[in-house]
Image 1 (tube, rainbow, N blue to C red):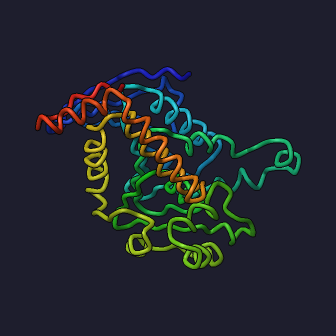
Image 2 (cartoon, rainbow, N blue to C red):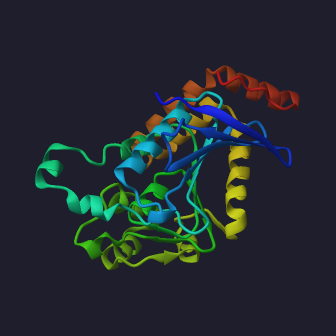
Length: 283
């Protein structure tokens, strides 16, 4: 497991901003804690010279950072972003072009992406500028997408005579429907933040200078709730994309009954009846 050291803690308008260092191992990813109680894990892609192209090295660092935050009991919600100019232009095309047939046949070169798709805690994407190809797929792996006014989304792989490889053909159709997804993927054209909002791909649009703080504010509102309940909600909602309705309903009911047995649920109901704020213990 990567070791993460605290290097600086700042108070910004009463809000914790704690920068984290990974002892030089995450030069392409910046990790920090945000929120009043430092319960928000902020992960920022940081390869401006390549417009945050998703090279194997960057994906390795991103997966390690996210995996560690997901396992950290003091972190309740994660936020993933790029810069104010670009989220990610997608795959490192030079790397893909260098792959030999034997590489593709014997190695799962995209296996690290599975870590990003299996995060248990709530994960919010903040997209400014282009989120193309793998960048769009990365955003769609998140539970909520907040877009800056300059955001653009697209799957341009067809221009390289290939197809999306980490969810573009599967998640986009579920998010916006077959006809719209087909139009975007077959044409290779991108859509604006406004169009993405109209299609239901993103939750909201904010000015570039404000969208990150808006997402952190949402993360703080999410983080006041019981962590086991948050994880259960995410598992139940995500199952709707994988299971037939009847199976999904059975899973939902099973998870609902299990939640009734938790200490946090007992506390939440007692607090509601007694008209007070609950004190959750994540148990």
